[in-house]
View 1 (cartoon, rainbow, N blue to C red):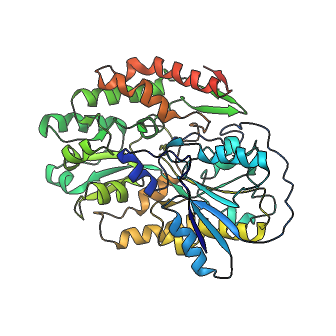
View 2 (cartoon, rainbow, N blue to C red):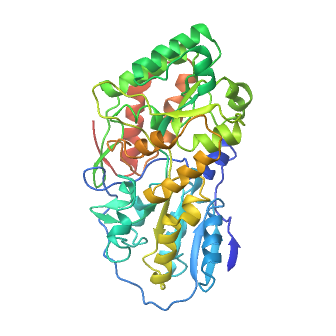
Length: 452
């Protein structure tokens, strides 16, 4: 195995989020594209003409967290020659991969065979540039592809053709402190109305304790996405509908405003040192992605065992269950690979094998069979106060499909337009029009036709 470290041109974030999110499949800008009906493409998919198959080493690009995956494969397959290259994984939207592929396209050499990205939006440019190979056109059998959780590979699909594989999911659930809930006689809320009412009680009966946080750039992916807010509906190739002032948006914004006002909802990032130092031990409930359990409570907060439990996200009565999603990386296979057989074998293994996904991977696997192994391992660890299996499995199939995947970053937009206003005392409801205008401007700058 040849190991290389490449940092040239890679931008890294110094904030706490980089540490936690990279460890769990990348909690970055959720902006990718989906198949017709769930999203749109950034261009017309290019025909796939296989490169001349000459064999040779398989070059794999991974971030530091997925390095263990590539090394494990190498140990399991010693006859396969590999060049394992570590890079930033496009963390925090660095666009390093796109920049390098543009260079390789000009020089007609240098493309890696397989790449991991912490982003879900790579196919918005990778298909149009001819970089990524179609996986469901004879490369990976349909029975294997059918093993992914429902909708998991939507960010990878363009007009029915699959151009990447989802590595992990980041479906949202309700994390809560079971010990405190029992001690105070509180019932875990099943509806958003019950959630808000409990937040009001907590503010009065146990001031300082929290039922959530609206202070992260990915807050809209937790709350607005789960409320079926139409802020990000990709409707076709370079087409998006943006409507942030409708009832599905205002109902959640009003809920957040009420809880921010009574201080049971934090306005600090859960990944900040401030939250870790001053608020981590005051969490009663925290809606958030599947990676919160390991990265946040067990890792960053050091919450003692047997306290943290998982419940389904609260829902709006009379509506189909819906959750948001905060992250989940992807694997891409290069259309320029001269060793497609070996590259495809690695790609399939790294996304489906229990050796890595079930036993080693930090995040909830997108491939359903290995997710069962992963869940069993989490349960057997004895850390959680309840069996987390049911809520996480259910949420994996309930991520609302109306929140699409475009090139523009919802997190960057929220951070620029909503977070500053909220922290200065403005209500989120009052900021919804500005959020809509900002999304519109960002989308148009990326070439999208915007409907409102």
